[in-house]
Length: 310
DNA sequence: AACCAGGACACAA
DNA sequence: TTGTGTCATGGT
Image: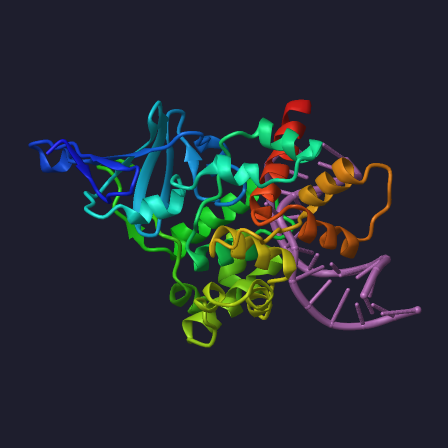
């Protein structure tokens, strides 16, 4: 009872709580972690299904409803259903990666060091490829709050209900490709996704029909993996790089959106005109093997800086 | 109330 | 190859 270590090398340990009333049985789990800014990580535009209740972060990973909070030892999780295997959560949160080692590989320039210092504890998650792909197809020229709204609507209409704590509002898994493949384009447009609807629909149908292999990017070189994803409608360079980084764990991938574009231009090439291709070439050569982490620091740094300025 | 949002795409030159 | 218009929607 009490404490059980899962894996010999895992920093995580189980903290299970039991009750006599079956309805009240929740399973708790603590992930030991240093230098993990949960709020920054869950709200930094990688994943779109987390909401802050005032005390916890609530969301759905796969078909697991979960509630997360930081504590002095790391992260405490609470689920609606008891779990024996917690790898779905530890894989997702990536708390076992040594962030100090990663930041140490960053180039020693003022802009990036400043961003890293301002966003200490910001992590990259490891998401499920389909949800990540579909989410970023819906992300183009939309604000993060709007992406969250569209995805919440999509999940509530077409996702399967997941088990939630007694008395809690219903929550839903992200819809599987097969669940969207049967939709009409107008049904998806009713989820407020606008011109992105045909992109998502065609992509869902290709995957549901087994005509697109979502496992290939795991074993292809970066550029080939990127080209494979870019064969999908609505997936260009930026969205492909987001999926490679946030789902496939390709740490070299460096998605360049409007925020990162501004960050590079302002911080690295002030008062100079630089072509997009030169900027891409710069990002590929400058930031090292964990360029994707550097990108996330620059992205988040620009956004929190703007928020505090207004 | 304009401006802009984690872009992609077809088409022009 | 690089530049422009278009595509919905609604938050700030």
